[in-house]
Each structure stands twice: as C-alpha cells, then as structure tokens.
Image (cartoon, rainbow, N blue to C red; front, side):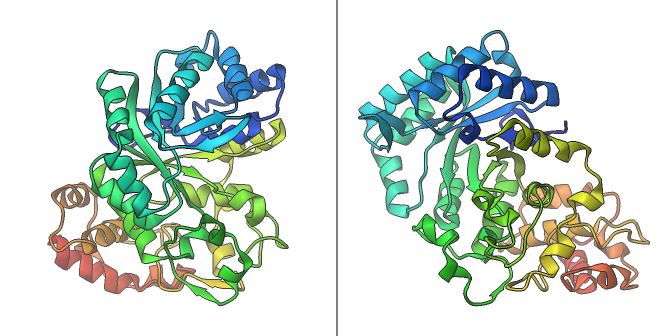
Length: 382
C-alpha cells in the first residue's frame, strides 16, 4: 500500500480507504471481516458519515485491539433522530451526536472531525456563525480531533471554506463526469440525465481552482463518489455514454492535485479487494486517458489531465508537474512563494524544453505542451 500526506495535517493515509456504505446493514462478523481485509491490505482510513447506531457500535467492537492501526474520519452534524439519519446545524444535537460517536466507537479521539455535507454558501455562513465551526476548532484545540474537515459536493462552497483557512481536510466528490459540471447547490444535478444532454467540454474552472488551491494551502482531499455511485462502471448508466473500470476511476481521483485517499464505497468483500488491487495494478490497467479521450458525450480537449502520456521528455522534464505548477500560478496575480519553491525543486525546468513536440504527439487531449513550457519558463524564470 502506498501512503500519502493528508495535506499539512501530519497524518499519513493509504491511497485506498473505506467509505462506510459497505459497513451498513452488516453483521458484527461481516464488519470485522472488512477490517481484517483492510488491515491485511494496508488500508488505514475509514470515513464514518453514517450516524446509524448499529453501524457505529459494530465498528467500535471490530476496532478493539487495533484502533491505533486506523485513521477515523468522523462526521459532525450527522446525527440519528427518530430512527433515521438527520443532518443538523443545531449545536446541542451536534455535541450529542459527536459524544455518541466517540462512545460507540470506544475511543477518546478521532483523527479527523468532518463538518458534514455543506453545499450552499448560506449554510457555510451558518456553520461559521452559529458555533459549529468553533466547536470543531475547540475539539482540535483539546486534542479530541487532530484535523478539522468539511464534506461538500459544491466547488464554490468548498473553495470559500478552504480559502477561509478554517479547514485542514476537504472531503469532495471527484470523478471525470462530476468534474465537468458547474457549481450548484442541488447535488442531484451531478448525476441527473439532463445535465449531460448537451456535449460537455473541459473541466469546470472552479473545480480546477479548488484542487489547485487545496494543493497550495496544504488542505488534504479525501474523495467520495469516485465511481459516481457505480454509474461510471456501467456503459448503460454512465452519463459519459461509456464505462470506466474501477481502477481507472481510482487512478483519475488519485491524480488530482491535493488528493490523498479515495474512500471506496465497497459493499462486499470482493469489491473491497478489487479496490485494494489498485496498488498492484500495472500502469496500463489504471490508465484512464484513452478511455476519457474516446467518450462520446464529453471532451477534455486542451486540458491537462496529469495522465503522464506526454512522457518521456528527452530533456527529462516532468511535463505534468510543470503544468500543474503553472496552473497553480495562473490562479493568482502573483506567484505564491510555496508554488515557486516547489517548482524550483523539480530536477528539470520548462526552460530546458527543446520544443521537439514529441509530448504533443502522445497527448490524448491535444494539450499545447510547448506553449505551456514557454509560459512556465517566463512565469518562474527557470
């Protein structure tokens, strides 16, 4: 298993994590078996958005004797009321729900405290002003959580929260279909048929800005909905009109800036094992570029997808990383010092480009690489 830094939190998380969907409705034995598979495969992070008391108690029992092997992403504001899930911003309910989560999981702390499901700017203002954000910060101050996070499907809201400096972690929906959709408060539109009726061209700029801002500010991203609820794995259901494999979906998410781990929503042991097999898969199996380039309803023409097909460069330039730093710089009037420093650490720079064009002949998305190298050399002076 490969492990990545979760932004600037100091936490090291496995590239493949576990969403809690697979635990729901399972027996104690089945939940323990899932943890056995995770532990043997090196997966160490679990998302716990669901407040179902049966799930929490079963997971708590399964964690006994091995709690230290796992990073738990707990959710504030996700509570159990009248026998069902409820999202709340009422501080008394948030506190009560979080206490229940600690008790049922049999722990005195969680590594990540995730403010649950914020998709509107008005809701973000409520979180900031009614005490919920302050409560999360209190928990961090007292060591009950190590990092403050928030989950969202809306890039506009997520960007505002990240830019506020209040977040250490963002849980966000990342896949190659949702990434083309504009910001919106109605999460249902991300997978609605009508959202894909017209041809879609290139990644939504706010989503690009969000990923790049998280990278620059050291906010780690944990991914939800990498498979689009399973739709992307079926040609009949995929909004792109063609299917991807689970390995391609995982690789797409894991090659976005700032992404540290994908919370796989595996519902069976074989599905979980298939996700863990990502770590042993060859580059050809994981490669999503040719599939995306051939999608009948969607085009990423001219947009760098960080797929690496441009390599090898005869001058040794890491074209994908140079392009990533150029995008980070372009989002600001002045180049952030951290971006400049990271660019300077590359072993080869854009100024070394010999303009041979070999990279452009290999790029499935017709990215103007030579032009980008000239821009990067001018922007960074290297």
